[in-house]
Image (cartoon, rainbow, N blue to C red; front, side, top):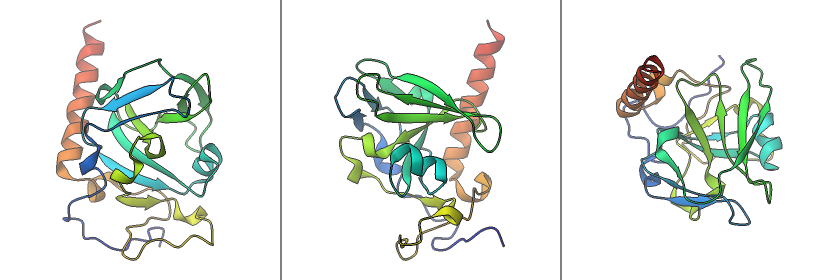
Length: 183
């Protein structure tokens, strides 16, 4: 079985994403600053090797949110492209002055969703992961919290995300398509 699901039932609310609206964050030197204008769609603790390398830690905590809800309030970050196992790539945004990675965009995700690094929030303790993903590459000395919802790799969005988050993404993708058609 590829899915190691524990903890909450599908119908239970996702707690990590609720507290994200209005939070602010930025890079280590303060040159890049941002504000989240809406709640995150979901919050992942990702244990994949790429996240381990990018953060220099055991995992990354990423708050997924539509690009239009991430408001830059200072210097804009720079970006670079990385290859991913899907072959579609990942764009990583970082501060040009100090190198702090503030968010990523995985090309396989629908629309223009950003994976905001929760560790760059001014109050990273304000949110926690809704799910742990890619636990197949979790470091063996790290124990997940009791009752944590965990998956060997990725999961089926329709089985994990709230109906509200799925609807927001549908609306987001429709807005993007409408704006692309109007150009």
